[in-house]
Length: 622
View 1 (cartoon, rainbow, N blue to C red):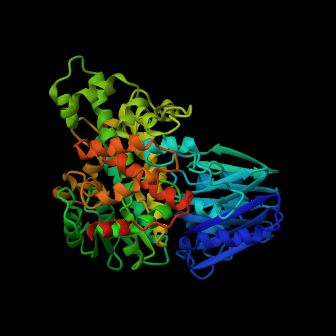
View 2: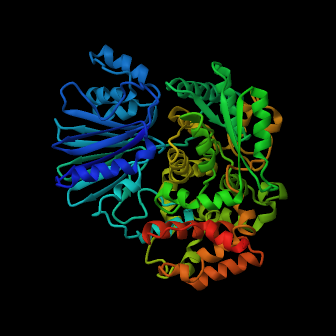
View 3: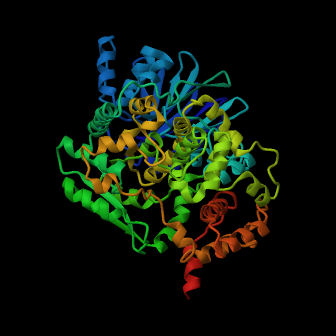
């Protein structure tokens, strides 16, 4: 696990100094080691968090001839099997590192090596023999990779902050990225918030040669629902694949491995499978809040599961003031505006003081369905098949019949955005330049829906979320907020073999009008008590709905005030109207949070201002 970076193409006298600056900006991703290499192709380097082959796994790793070399951010869980195959072909290894397996795999299989990798990765393979650079990102997007191509010169890195070390990379805001951020609460790939920088999408390769960059897709999730398995058989097979995914992620480490434990079904099942492997006592970690919030009880359920499984359990309790004080650090971890989940920042920091690696339950929601839009998909499917819908056909949307009936008549990409932050109409009122001619955020999603099965609304919705929400938001916060504390997070649910299996199951086996994660819950009952399997989902999110109406109100008032909006991107009157409506009882929680997080980001990155939220809150107390 590490951070990688590189500069390729036309050489510049300042390249070595730039590489050193990029290296320093990625130090948090790999505090254990650093490495750099120059060649006629350019210069590349890495920061290493040593987890596999602690003594000899340094990068960049070079072949025997010295003309091919590789940097890897991530872990390859099947590297032992690949090594045996490559040794049988005559390859000889000098280390026990998974990175060297990628290097020899490239020599044996060319770009096709990525098809053989089971893991999470962002890879750079420098091939001096062919005068080309290969970049690759893992199938579901667990590891990030940004790049900027200007005048035949390519720079790339694991995080935006490293690219911004290059003064030639503009900090001009990409207005299209801002437009979509306001809807999705994150900047969607292949965009970045900066006009000069782009994101390599998940499951894609990029080849840089002779000043040109060619990008192609090598894998994507496909939710076809073609299995012939019954629900009981599917649950048993799901457990087999998940058990193996957990085993691989525990074994592929030369350091102790812990686990997130929220008390929900996903993390609890992962911990149960880890405990089944035996070995040393497992360390688990959960997050709670000092300010009691009625709808957050995860910590109690996590405590119950820890006792049941006999783990060494740690509870991390944070207050509203701690959250506010750390918001600038959270913003800097992302490098671009982000208004999704940020609670793992505090939990990851605590975990990192005990272990370097932790397993999580991330990905189960997107594969098996639990979000509001997944439930709506099941309702839409029912309503479209029912001439005269009855009360029971609306499921959890019984109190929102008009929304469900509207969604029934709309194409999927349109009703999906009703579950986002700002609608296009609201953005046109908010933004000083209206929509500037950009496509609607619904139309941004339309191509993903065109690729999906039009006959299975649930599966289509899950597939689109696995290609957009999962990498652009969920896996973004997992990576940035853990690596900010030099912690590696592994997600067994996102093993690509499990993703492919989940895609083979029909949507009805996952989400119905009155059930969610059906096949996963059926599998989990073999390990977990009913209190865990049947409890209402809380979600690993901060209780910002409670806090924005109480302790954080002064912060909102200052951060979204007219003087604070002097950048001219938003209409101050539209922002104030939103705050006034919220104070009067309308629920604009996530729209306000989206604006707040943008403002904090803009002050730091675009305006370069040092900002301390606690100064505002302290003045209010005084």
